[in-house]
Image (cartoon, rainbow, N blue to C red; front, top):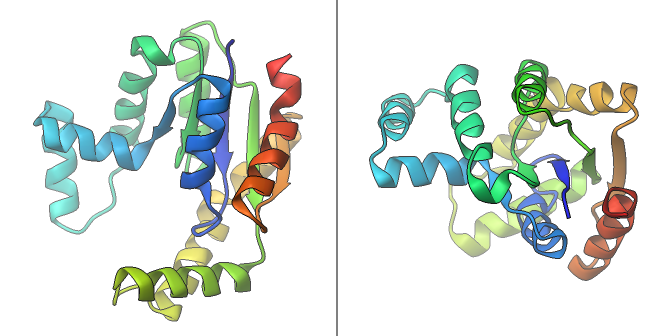
Amino acid sequence: MSARLVLLGPPGAGKGTQAARLAEALGVPAVSTGDIFRANVKDGTELGRRVQDVTASGRLVPDELTNELVRDRLAQDDAVDGFLLDGYPRNVAQVAALDEMLAAAGRELDLAVELTVDPQVVVERLTKRAQVEGRADDTVEVIRHRLDVYAEQTAPISQVYADRGLLAQVDGLGEVDDVTTRLLAAVAPVRS
């Protein structure tokens, strides 16, 4: 089966957990930009060295480099027939880059699925996670800033996909299994 999906949602929406579950159910790899960055750095690839130089200085990885890493990952054998992107695209420019990558391969995106959550619940969820995991830098102020950055840079992607008729919104609150069930229902048309 082939499914080419993007998973969207703010920090703390449960994307990582749900991406792994959804990808397994669909038989496609979950492709996380964070995982790609870490794997390339760990393997000492040329791209990994470039990522490490950028992140070591405290800067964000630029779109061009992120796009290159994603292009390389989507060209690997396990992603040829499908994938679930988690953490990419992060802005409208990356949507255009993904469109170009897929068009060059004679493919197109099947669906963008957005996990919707109440911002106050996300703040509570991430604050609790920070306490449990000992993340002293994940304060309420930092979490709210991350949500603001998401709203400014990433949330407009939802509108792009909605305008194309490719957006499914799924309630991301509740028990993990319930959210997974709702996600599987949302992607059912892609699977048929």
